[in-house]
Image: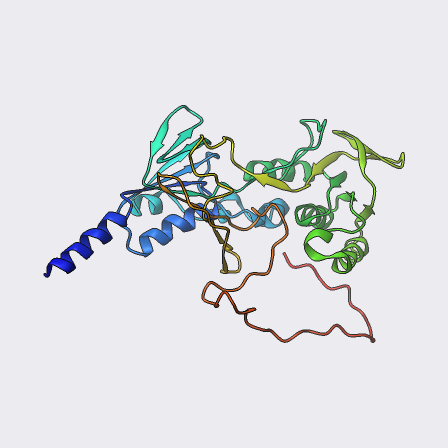
Length: 338
């Protein structure tokens, strides 16, 4: 081997991290460790997750699992044996509370050191001011199973928020024979992500399904068995679910001079559609490579159309034929797929 070849090989080896630490044991986290092994990475991999559960799929939490048509094991994305075969060391039930160059501090006080850190923590449900502890949320499997036990009793349900989670919970509960009322502060459901026209269509479909929908009115008081609205109306229910979005799950603030999750070079992976999008980049301080990876259900804002990674940055992207809506003829309320 020539001197130049030897130097090139040594340089290549020096850029490969010896230890990759993935923070977040959701879809983004588990697909990251699987992808590393599939790409031939032979170094150490650690996977940290705030929940005690192994990685599982979250979309069924508001649909099949909540309805009882799927059992708990069906949503698992991997198993202990598979992670062991991949050589992945797991630290579950522990939150990352601080990020510093080359290390992550966990909620038990331990510090993990790594050459490359991937942040894939997902999101945490937003909580309303004064929200009682008895009100249900729906972000993890334990919350889904708890709500499922409540819905099995029948009765009535108040859903606060007509976003995707709220609408899916309302549909599932209605199919189970529960009397459902949905309250949304915005004029139409999901206007921030779908626009007002499609949001108005969603409102019509929700209403026509048999679920009562109140839009354009805020909640002034929330209890475990109902709510008071800004117009003075009171709504009573046997159970209450709040689904008003979420915020990025990151318990700690980066130390001075470390890479900020918001400013680091970010890579977003949509595991549902298989598309990728590059986020803003910044020059990181000395320390490990830091990337962020998110999966379905982790977005804190509307999805923006993005070009494929292989498409030239100066090009507007591949064009698609527009689908024209019929201007006349019979209309259909459509059906909701599970």
